[in-house]
Image 1 (spheres, rainbow, N blue to C red):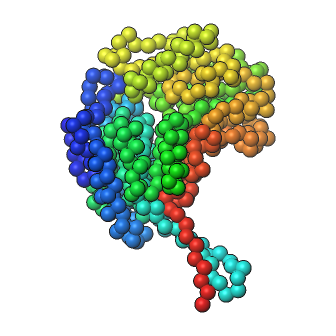
Image 2: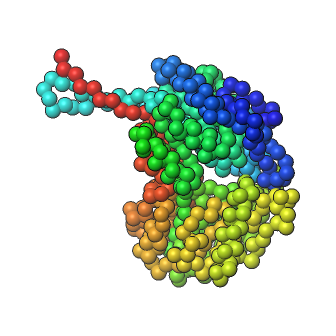
Image 3: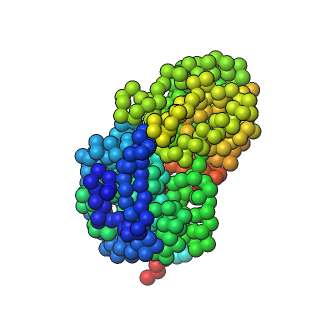
Length: 480
């Protein structure tokens, strides 16, 4: 049995007797996708098949690669309703969010269809008389792509599009929770004309199947999006072999609200970035730092706004957000909030859990924790759910120090009407993405995206920066 009738025959290598399943988080007893797991032998066959196809693909012309990427974008748009329905069922996105994800993924492929034509080398002056000096970039080869469950279509597209644009093959290991959506995306790549074998897939537990993929000598580099703990382990293994690693990992993203801010905009924007998709985004706002003299007014408005949103059936247009995607994540979020409550931290009164989550769905209402210290665990550790902690700062300098007092450095926002405050924040916030009067969430595919500190590695995704990971440079010096 597989998702929505898709066979995945052109790319999936999975022959183990054990099965991997995805369940509908709104109706946790309903199986959405059910497939056999991959064996270590399957991983070897998948990498070998991708390598065979990549030998030809790396010699293809920019015109061929550009046309394929454009076709993929168009094919995604043509199938966006079916793909969105599958994401709603598998990870509990609202239908609007799921459709937006597919549309963005399609745009990413079309963007890189144009970047294919950008120069990949340059002419450099030489200090030696009569010497011509230049560089050119070459594809890595076959890359391993390990993707998360929360954006099973978009995050895979963010990795696949530049990999294919610059002549690579790929072996995909998607997260089990969003399995069917990721595999259906690869089905659509082949429908759009992808050369057979160029992208293959393996499925199963990360420690075994992901470990076998990372260990394969056929894999020239690994791009991973997921937790910091797992990403750190992969980074160590890759460093030991000298192969490149791109890691997009955890975040504890802060929004700073200063006394000069437009509070209406700040409240609306923070609600959006903290509670959209039930806070299950690596860039979601989970810390709010408010200047002391506007803290009460801001918090009152925030609580009032949060009580107006509804978490419910993701198929219903009235639902602001749906359920938590997995039982494990549901339990982690509930444990974090209950622990904070036991420590005396105030929580929005609406906080409640379903009586029978395995029947009624993994729904958790939004939580706003107040009277939180910048050193509290709930203010420091990633929760990955609809929970936001509020603390105060006396001025912008203290607020920035709270932002930077974190092992994470992914995204941060500042709400102000003072250009000097905005400039200071842009320069001093130790994060990879800085937003002014905007949400901490959201990516623009034409700009590089990546975190600092334990949120990411030196390589970044999206924009032209992606080329630096999916290719390697070679210098040429010539004298006639």
